Amino acid sequence: MLYIFSSDSPSIQLSEMINAFCHSYSDFKFVTLDNLPSLKPHDKVLFAWEADICGVDTSILKLIHKAYLSSPKFFSGCKGSILCFSKTIFYTKYFSSHIAFLTNNMGLEFIGKPMVEAVESYNNFKNKQRLNNISLKQLCLEECMNLGKRLKNDKHELHQNPKITAVHASHIDRSNTYALMKLILDNLSIEKSIFSLAEERIMDCRGCDFEQCMNFSNHGVCYYEGDKLKDIFKSLDSSQALLVACPNYNDSMPANYFAMINRMTYIYRQKDFSDKYLYAIIVSANSGFDMVAGQIISAFCFNKGFRLAPNFALMEQANEPLSILNLPHINQSMSKYAKDLEQKLKEN
Image: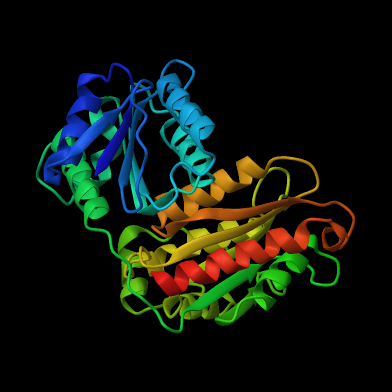
């Protein structure tokens, strides 16, 4: 069953996007505050929203809020995707990543590249129009239709011996983030490959034009092919999951992670990451967990197409070096996270 969490009064544009998405579904229901469903494992969920003048959709927030009051794990066992429309060029990814963050913490898994966004006049589809001789609007509706099919038919292969690639950017002798990552990895019985982005200089994307990037990609290399990223991408190719250990640097990911994401483009052009789960460890001395998580969701799931595992991020607060090891709840939180991670990779 497909359940649609939508705006109270969707615009013509959003309604057309929803209709295109539902093209391959014979059975779907719109969710309202008065008929909140009891979701079952393997149900599908669509969030279809549009930005108001503040860049949010309050009707969607009310539905999520009521779902949370019903159960903090309301979406467990379900898979989701997102449609959004904005009359301006703003807000689509910002609020979509917020929806994903909220509902993922309630147990919802998102397939890779789970969002179709449209702005006024559908101008965000102009690049794709270069390869397709159809209107911008039709491109948008085809994207919606394809997303609906992908969500409906989504399956994930079983791996008896799964592997996870873990990446960090920390000094191992004093980092709370690294200490927590190591605790989790030590509690996994699956194969692990661990890489550090802090040990050497990681070159950011050179900004090759499309043809140059495709030429490098066709040969399986990047313009900068001599640094650690080549080894990370090779490991990722044979892995079923990526674990990102990410400290909060000024309410943002460390710079080396942005370089990794940008450089991943040449791999992304040739490989599909939708069969790989995304996990994250986020440690902050103060706050800002949601800001960092939103960046990770947008970059790795929305953009590069990784699957967002349910409850993908373990978020902990720690300040003094290695003080995270002394938190009274840390062993319980870490053990549960590791157990859920390993079970997900072996079940799917």
